[in-house]
Amino acid sequence: MKENVLPNLPDLNKISRPNWIEINLDALCENIRFIRSQIPSHTKILLPVKADAYGHGSLACSFAAKESGVDFLGVAHLTEGILLRQYGIDLPILVLGPCTPADFAYFVEFKLTATLTDLKTALAFDSFLRENNVTAKAHLKIDTGMNRYGVQAEDFDSIKQIMELKFLQVEGMFTHLATADIPNHTNTQNQINRYTRLVHVLESENLRPEICHCSSSAGTLQYPETHFDMVRPGLALYGYNPMGAFPSSFPIHPIMKIKATIRHIHEMQPGEAVSYGGYWVAQQQTKVATIAMGYGDGFLRGEYNKGFVLIRGELCPILGRVCMDAAMVDVSHIQDVQIGETVDVVNGEADFRISMESVAEEHHTIPYEITVRVARRLYRKYIWKNRMLRWDDLKKELNVPEFREYPYR
Image 1 (cartoon, one colour):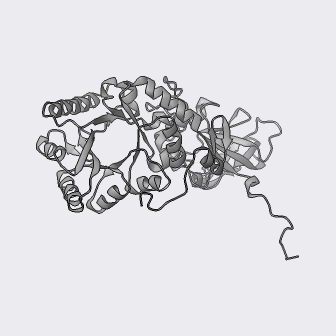
Image 2 (tube, one colour):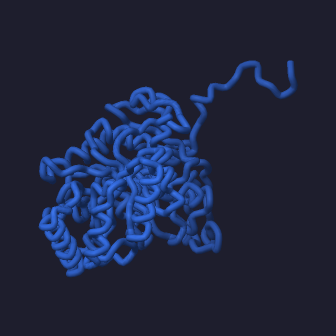
Image 3 (tube, one colour):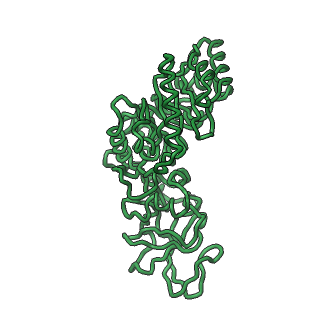
């Protein structure tokens, strides 16, 4: 027998997990159905799956959304779109970030839809296509007040030239609302008015593209006049309120739960401090549990002595600073608490005080920032058709094909 080698191989499928996330794809599909009920029958839905679908898993969410009838996917960068194509996603994919000349060949090869943000690049792209005797699709980004990128809404000469390109087929035009999540903000209506005027001008010139769109989640839910031909509700489809409040007034369901386990339990005496900096000091004898959840897992560190987790349905305050791989919580009130017990770190369905929205508010940020920070080292479990599945099993259920570097060759 070899030294230090077990006679039987351990089953890797049964390895214990210190922490994990649960992604409820059934809830994603329910949210898609709700959004569909709020928009005109002809209006398309684009699901943003940039930043790994806001941390929820771009492949899983893309394939599940396809089964639910989503029309478009949206990514921020070219490489995100290429990866989806390499794994067999055949829905239209709009790359929302600006297109550059170095990208032209990849848009053609991987059948991705480009975003145009200036006349010079649009002309260069059309020339590239003409030289290679091919075509490509694009959407024109209009800056109506976000002041991030795009052609100014009043620059009709540039817009007209772009719309009249021959090889570059400009099938869409969009803008982005900067303040739609702030109730009754005057800038929102100003942006909507600027964009709507441009749509009407293009209609009068027979230049209106097929797909006009301007609404993310907040616009979709609060400004019906912005639905046009397509909406882009990211946060709402993932089940979080774009206006921040919890519970939401809309029937949307959060699709992510963050779980951890208790790894250590100890008693602290009065005067002893917890974690880096000693920002929490025991005033009385306190039972403390160390849980496997830290900023290395994406759990925010910024605040200390703030927030809760849930153990056996009981709120347990977070003590001191969150560490890279652990956080300490007060479990004095939980009788006979044990190492290995499951901890709800983020789960709005269990308690609104640990909802994604509430955690974001505690840290003076937005739910997006929390979901996109979730680390890849957290194991993923997926709920699909009322069953909890591992990724390997989910891939079979969703018929995810094998990776192909050049899928159209």
